[in-house]
Length: 394
Image (cartoon, rainbow, N blue to C red; front, side, top):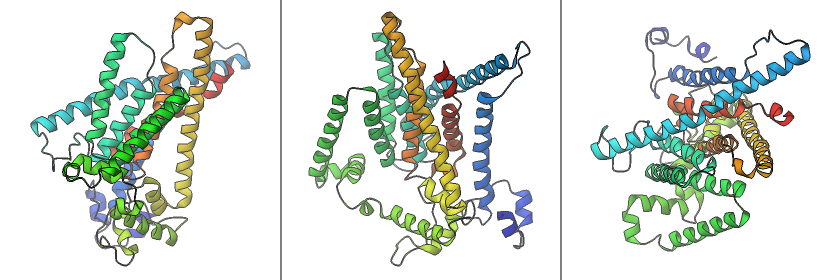
């Protein structure tokens, strides 16, 4: 549809055939935007096929045995995909830490300013989104183990928390706090959750009480934290974002069903600025992945995408509950066996997806960067590839 809409434009076919990438401000940017999403979807299709492929079973003696064998094989394929989660998160965590230290200590690459340390990713939102997802996996998948292993694991969690703070992204900080509370509510006694909520309330009160202190406002990270925790009108926290949301809503109202075309938000949104908007003539992305999808592809497409995400989150939590009940039953029968790893790994991947999605409600990394496409669709495939039905039957 986008190609048909532009094919009569002067000079369309020459760059279309010869230019591999188009910048945000190029009228043909929709080509780049479309291929960013397609690469992510193809990656997801490859991973999900690993968990659902059906192979014939020559040794099956009847149809019932064959169906049972295929079900077990599909489940094994899904377990294989999800078994990659731990090494993938370890590699991401180590890579982020190493590149952050290189940029911080050696200025390789040179940071834009004193708060923009985001190597090897594109911006602080991409860096923070992946850092907090890895952090969420680490805290949600923790299991009982020896004191030495617990100490090493704790050091790793503290290092990941440092990366979350260093991201300088308020959405990342908020996602980390919310996931901590959610994991505590799911895995710990309710009194611990209440204690964490109480500490959070006390922290917010202290921050608001010191919001006008000059020494706090001189520190860029404390100033950023104050702007997040200060009790005020939400529109005052980030006026530029709210103006972007207003533009996007205007686009949705004009074409609610089919949208304006993929990749159109950057240039088209300036036409929908409200009077008095100081950012009216500045093109930008929405900084909300669902709103941007609704404006570009229509509300039905955005609703379908949200439903797919909801299905993944529900499936991940449901699978963890099944595995958790099974592990508890085994622990009762054999107290010395301990707790197995994978029941909390499933919760870890699900919480990583939750943390990532929270950050994308005020960022645009998923919509424009292929690095985030690969990370997001890996999380989706790891959650959806589990065979919940076969687990319940067992």
